[in-house]
Amino acid sequence: MPELITTDVVGGKRVTISSGTSDARIYCTVDETTPSISSTRYMVPLEFLQPATTTVKALATKKGMVSSAVAETAVTVVQGPTPTFSSEGGSYVDAVGILISSTASGATFYYTTDGNPPTTSSNEYSAYVPITDSTTSTVLQAMATYLGMTNSEVMSATYTITSLYPVGSTGPAGGVIFHVNADPSITDWKYLEAAAADEATMLKFVGNNGTYNIGEGARGTAIGTGKTNTRTIVDVMASVEGYIAAGAADVCDTKSVFFGSITYDDWFLPSRDELLSMYQQREAIGGFVTTGDTAIHGYFSSTEESQNFATGVVFSTGKAWTRDKSGECHVRAIRSFL
Image (cartoon, rainbow, N blue to C red; front, side, top):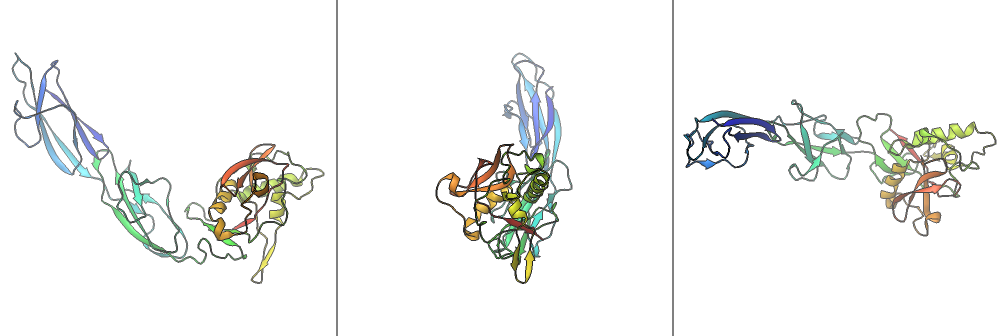
């Protein structure tokens, strides 16, 4: 008698049929009829990817031998639960990060925001889906795949962002908004604002101590780490005997802007990825030096690479690069706020 083994696969179930008789031919049916040598010959595993209960029957034959008894198994496939969103569709003042979840474990989510229905070739969900565009409503659609269950139905919701500070707008301190945070795990800031202009002179990374090793506290690269990098650089160098506080981080840390009857003194040197984000919005921000060789138009970030080198961005190409700390680069301060 053939052996029928059912296993879970993404999108449904698979049935593998085998026989203990060498070189036996296997015939099978999936329509409740009894298999015979006139039935479909089994060659590859059978896959069931639609919600249904199907009875698989199999018969093994070999020349010179009596056909086997019929083996059968019932294969039940159900549809996976439709995913849910952490925030309902609607109008939001600020950017939102949408978490996708399911009532069943082991789900893999795929989503779109371009109006097309999601497939397994769409964006695969990881941490959250950022909804930041304030120029038009965003339709988020998501589906889930599961082991042993068919793909879910599509969940859809429409989000409208009415932010007071969309990317490219003027910030509270007179600069330009270049990044809106949608990460729901970050609650202490929402916007990044770039100063309206570069600092007046090109600066070294840490003033007169170009090769001082700041350490791990100043090596954050991600968006959101520039403020910590800057604070670490300033604090560490303040304890160095003979240090002249005139480096890139120092100048940003002491920057003060009076705008709209308020003084803003919470500036810092952007991290590598914050600087890369500024490059992406360079036309909206304006005033960057974008011509000439690397030494002329490079910008320092607050991300230390090593004792001798720091990370920067070349604004003619948008490429991150490492620069000798003792060299001078352009500097543009930024600030974060809720």
